[in-house]
Image 1 (tube, rainbow, N blue to C red):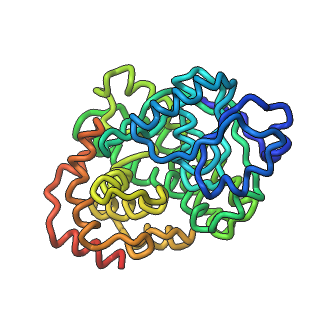
Image 2: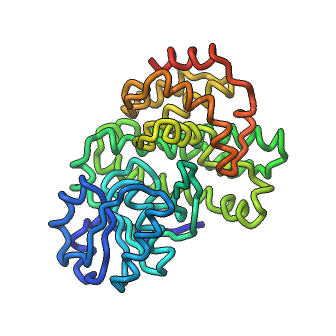
Length: 341
């Protein structure tokens, strides 16, 4: 069981005694957050990307400054950059998610890119997570409702896990499955609070990001120790739906709001599993999640290419989801496009 040190008392109160630190962030939200720090950081690094070579430069910068603490301020990109630097430089890591669109602030691994292919690197949990409601609420609502993506994805993760158990013999635990289903049920019960970005909605997402990460933790640890042979996926939270996100970014060379594209992937994977896409679409709409291609400026051509390349991307990441082994036909892609239009 993983436990986190989470403070909901904001930036100013938590940084009264912190002076020797470096910040990794982006604009926005740094412009809104800078004034809340009682003491200025030694340096503010605007994160460009999560490519391995870029991150190595950031490690050198932090090491040269001889700081005690690395602070990530922003969304998943800024948080993962800070996490990686703290890991490699052996420093304290504080995560300040200014949006709760992705679970990076509670996970121990950084999603490092090498020529567009994602590798999950490291084992560095945040020493402190600071939630500042006033900052989170200043972001566009869609950037916070996107936080459902990394929780609702458990529905697909569980389907993929069951299929991997049947096809490959992956270890499968009924109690973990029940707990995953409970987490999704709690998420759905708070749809209105999450959609309105209330304090309750924000805290629900933070708590569920922690719960699902804690549930996933034993399997990710075993996967590393066993050389990936026991687990072909990242059970139980992440499944084939995440591959659509990584494939889309690789095909387009653009970045997207993680949770929104994972939402699209959830519909795609539900379809490939031959399950009811209508109920999934209704659930995602209840949160106000912007998951349709038109919402994220994804063209029909980009949409199709990302789907066709999902299996290739998954295998390059060291993942093997049986549902992606099927031959995906043009009519299926066209059907999915209509469903999501």
